[in-house]
Image (cartoon, rainbow, N blue to C red; front, top):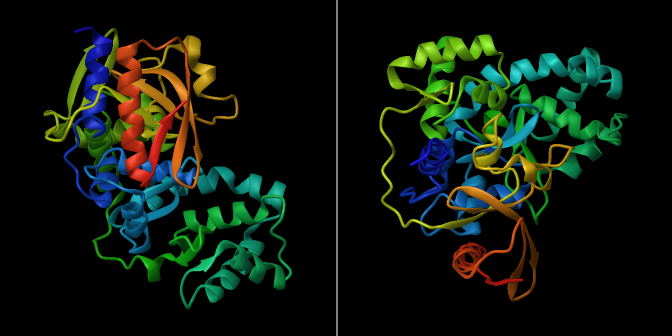
Length: 359
C-alpha cells in the first residue's frame, strides 16, 4: 500500500465514513468535534453519511432537542457541535476570531463596543421566551433603530454567537431560528482550563481525522501554530507520531472499530470534513482538478469520492417523488465505478426518503 493510500484509508475510517458503527447524530458530531454547517442540508447529510440507518429527520430532531447546536466556533464559520462541547470550544477558538474581526466589524458595519452592547440587550430581551426566527430578531433590532441590511445582521448574530450569548435553534418552517445559549443548552459539564481545552482539541481532532499534521489542525481550528504545538504536546500521551514523505503526521494509537457496512463510493456534501479538515488536500484531490471542487471564494462543491479519492462533483435537484443527481466526473467513469456511485446515490436517496435517479 502506498503512503497516500495508507493516509486515505486511515482518514476514511477515522472520519467514520467507511464502515461507521455510530448510531446517533450526537455520537457522530461529538466524535468529529465539529461539522461545518453553513450549507444546512449538506450538514445534515455530513452527519447521516457517518451513521447507520440515518435519515434527515433524525438529524433535525437532534437539533430540535438541543443535542446538536449550530453556532460559529472557529474561522468565522457555522458548524454543528455536540451540546457538551459548545462552551469550551467557543471560549478556546471563537475568542481569537472575535479579536481578529473586531476592527472589521467596526469599520464595515459600525459595530463598535457601544453598538454591540446595545444589540446584546435587545436580542437577549427578544429571545427570553424561547427561540425566534432570524427574521423576527432582525425586526426587533430594526424597531430599535438598528439596521440589519447589507450583511450587518448576519455579522452581528455571528458575533453574539461567538460570545456565547446566542446559538442556532431548531428550524421553524425551514427558516433558521436563534435562542439564548444558556437557556437552550444549560451548562452540564465542568469548565475546562485553557490547557485542558487545548489537550482535548488535539486529542479528539487527531483521533477523528488522523493521519493529519500540526498545520492541518492550525488551519481547521484557527489557532496559532504556537498554540497548536502546545496542544499536541499536552495530548501527546494519547497520540502516535509518524513520518511519511518528509511530513510528520499524528493519529490515535489505535484505529476505530469499523463494524458497519463498507462502501466503495461516497457522495460527499459541500464543505464535508473529509475535505475541509486539512490544509493540504492533495492526498484525496489531484491539484489539477482543485478548482473544480474548491472555488476561489472558498466554496467546497459536493464531491464524488471513490476509494477515498475525489473523482468529480455532483449536484442534486429535489422533486416531489425523488431526487435527481447529476454527476460531473473529472474523467469518464467505467461500469464498475458508475455502479458504485449509483449505490451511493441510492443511499443518499434513502436518507432523504426519496428515490434517487442518477443523470
